[in-house]
Image (cartoon, rainbow, N blue to C red; front, side, top):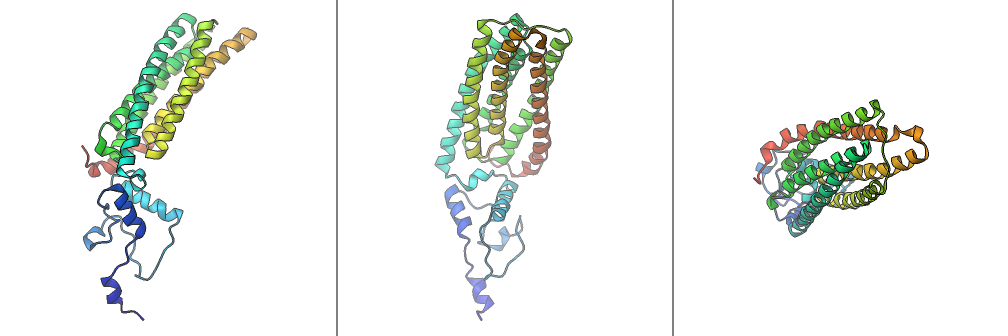
Length: 293
């Protein structure tokens, strides 16, 4: 039998933790350090015998992720090297700026179309495009600080603001759509409506894909939310085309345009409420770990 005191003097380092620390270019957060006892009072699992081993499973990875978030960092801090994180941060900023410019132009065109052609879907898309502009500005704020690329607290604040914007915008879209249904406002069809629908639909799909891919790498709920909003914009853009074509062939289905507006408003409202419910507690939990401002 080996003397326990000898094993205590030579602890075996956790290769996974050491590798994660080197990759991040940061000191290991509390709960991940194996150096001294003063780091073992935060998020530390029950002590195990020195000879006991545990395979690196999905459950173990989830525990590490939870502990990292508990220390104010996102899960991306465990996977990305510092230069990789900054590279993806710059890409997120570029995509956000492109999204702002493009969706702002689409919003102006869609608002004009909505008032000229009395289209609830066009108004819904215009408002969603305006929401996309605001959400992209929030993402810009989220990644404006290079040192806060992995900051969970900053991430959660951005998501809370997005949730509030989503709820308020959905109420405006819902009110306009219900008004159009109540007054039986019929959409007018022309080439301008088709052009805006096609351009906005495909543009928003491309933006949504780019934001989703960046959000997956950076484990950013804010980018996922921005991607979700762009996808809603694509659905609304194509719904203008579909509603107009259906109305042209079947005038008795005049309510399709307003119904789509109601459904999209409810979807945005539900997502906004869920975002607030998930993120408000996390903002409170991580406020003591904000170290980047």
